[in-house]
Image (cartoon, rainbow, N blue to C red; front, side):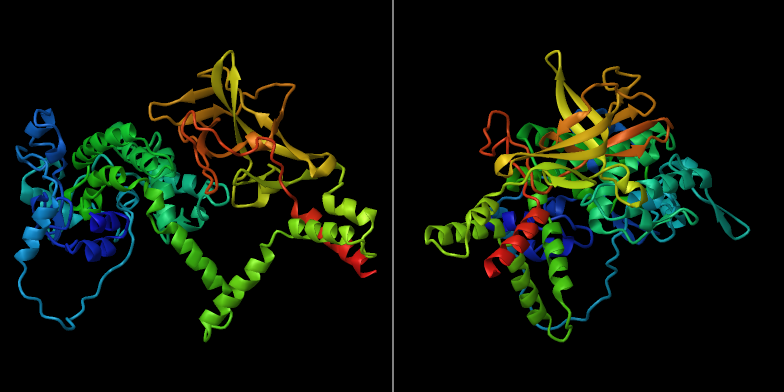
Length: 538
């Protein structure tokens, strides 16, 4: 059981194979399905296809009898049974003697390709719809309208329901090129988009997650047919809910049954070459999450970010370990809480009746600043906020604000754009930060705000909420970003941000955090340091 838990905590397929002892290549590439995995060797694609999601459907489901829309066969098999510890031990006893030593290495192609976006944009080398894929359809005897024909030595094949014209591809690329997201949300995806060539490349793993979970459904709106949009959007919602910070058992059970339906919908649309082992493994992700918890606590992104931080410390490449140790030491010195240390030192000297400490210095160490300040940026609740004016020339969008309110005992979300950041200072360093925003009219459903069947929220930019209370407490603000709605030019689609520092608490659980907590400003601490050091020296 411990091995299985450790195995499920790794998200990369090679590590999955090393820890489980089960090869993730070939016909039986899924350790969970083991010997009962549904796989087919494609003659012209020269690879294994893992169509067969219908096995996980209920035995009386109508799609089990549908041959023409899937692989041309009736599906009478039940879902693969789960392996027990005794079953694994029996398999180990059947192993042949192992000969240790070096084997001839094969070159591996480690490119991380996004099958969906590559197929939709028909990117060479990344698309799963090519001549060999069409010849495999003909070999399997399914989808006769997509079979290729040969004339005068050339092959011809018809367009599919997901085939896009050059104008439609350009529209998707322009949308992705224009997207601005908050800091920490993803990298600058627009740098990876080529509108002229209609290509997307050099995406990092986390960018691929953001593209699939958030941006791709927005980019496809009004472009692809409804059946294609529904299937891809359901897959997007599956990964978005699965990767959330808080998972409930009921939600996982729903995802467990829903992903089977989604994969079956995809099998009716895309060719068999699309369904490699990575697509098949999605059917087990919800089950794994029920065993070992939320996905985000098991993936490699935090470790990769930390390794990136260590790499930035390396100035002398011949001595990387020494550079990292020195950088960590300096970083630790900067992170010391100077304010508490300084206050403790001044109070101690004052009690000892030291001549270098007077009443002014003691008051300064306690904090006695007054006045009103304005900022163009502010960090709170784990989010970095910028005013709309500041972000005009930036590639990131940090001005979107979400505040939860209540109207007539009914919860309502208010969406706005941040215009001003004002800080009110009080005695003993007490500060209140206010956000002044332009708010969209969310009181009129359908005209000011609307929700589609997938839960996406859109706001009408021509309707603002006229109010005498444009200010909200910064501590109440959550960050969102807006992307253009391709089907409605005057509407923006809301994408909610995420903070790595804050978590949703279950209902009824009390938090020990003070609601009137105030944030320290580093500029004031530095100013105190300068004044106090001068006074202590004199």
